[in-house]
Amino acid sequence: MITLPRFATVRQDVARAPLGDVAGAVRAELRRIGLDERIRPGARIAVGAGSRGVAQYALIVGAVVAELRAIGAEPFVFPAMGSHGGATADGQAEVLESWGITAATMDCPVHTAMDVVRVGETPAGIPVFCDAAAHASDGIVVVNRVKIHTDFHGPTESGLTKMLAIGLGKRDGAEPIHERGVAGLRDHIPHVAAVQLAHSPILCGVAIIEDGDHNVSVVRAVPAAAIPSEEPALLAHSRTLTPRLPLEAFDVLIVDRMGKDISGAGMDNNVLGRMFIDGEPEPASPRIGTVVTLRLTEASHGNACGLGFADIVSQRLLDAMDAEITRVNVETSGFLRRGRIPPAYPTDRAAIEAAFARHAHSGDGTNVSALRIRDTLSLAEFEASEGLLPALLDRPGITLVRPARELPFLGDGALV
Image (tube, rainbow, N blue to C red; front, side):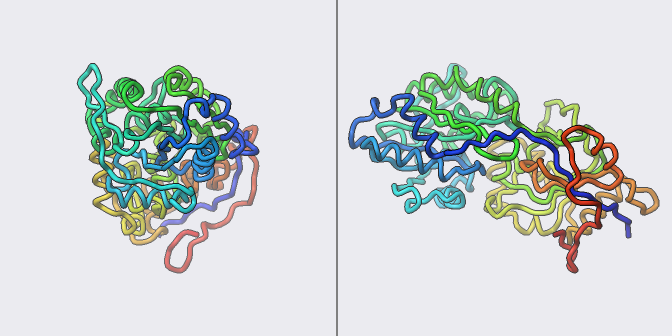
């Protein structure tokens, strides 16, 4: 049995700029761009909602719906999330419901049918599809968080442009882009979005930026024609608020939980320093020896896409995985390495001990350098192995919250 180090709770300064009245900001932004002047009374307006764990997402989508009602429109919500939720109507409805988005909470219909219409194709021959109900409406408003993407980097990454290109097209729209790999995402998403803007009734996008502590920091309404020119600046601002791990290299990272509500890739590979896409270079940092991941969030609905980023997992995580939902998402993405199943251990304790054993000498893991995080979205507070404390606490912006203690395992080996 390996000896584990003690862990202290540490807090690092992250960018904090929470927005006070989020719903009020949504209303003000939609009025700022003169949305009421472009919508006739009784118009049916489709509001596209995604599958990510965005802070106060139901509040924001609900505020969009309420403002549309206030100007005389008849809004409805539809899922703009590509192949997520197992690429089924019931699955996508379940994802929306997990964020608090239902017909009752939004006070409007929610249409989750997977029917699409082909609206055109790009100069490279990529077909472009749009949700059929949304395309038949009098206008579409998409609502999404703008942030760094887990698969590619460019002027626009995860946000309004990507939702237009992949989210609106359901599985039919996502697959032709994803099958072209990273180049398909980086190079073709803007062209697919341009076709969508030209041939679907897009009114505007509502962009959300979160600060480093997962608070809504910015809400910005962007008229459809301005999305290509304005979104890069929103992404640049989001990048300045994005937190990172405080170390460039260490032995073990314990990740308490992964899931689609945490990141589209289950765990944000920008945090892990892992790309795991054939033909693409691995990031220079951070360099983590072993990643051990313990559980899957309930909000993932069994989707363990990104499981392959871990080196070791607990059996509890695998038991929570829906193999079919995960397969659909992994195959649609085309990044099969990220869907590989790592060695699984019967308990959290066994999984963690196995991770430490890879770096320990003669069963003594007390000198193994390790961090423990709740998930890759929550980096303001974390735990650090006792040996790392002197170097960490010597850095500006890092403070000790709780002295070192043994990892708190329950009798069945579960980590508290």
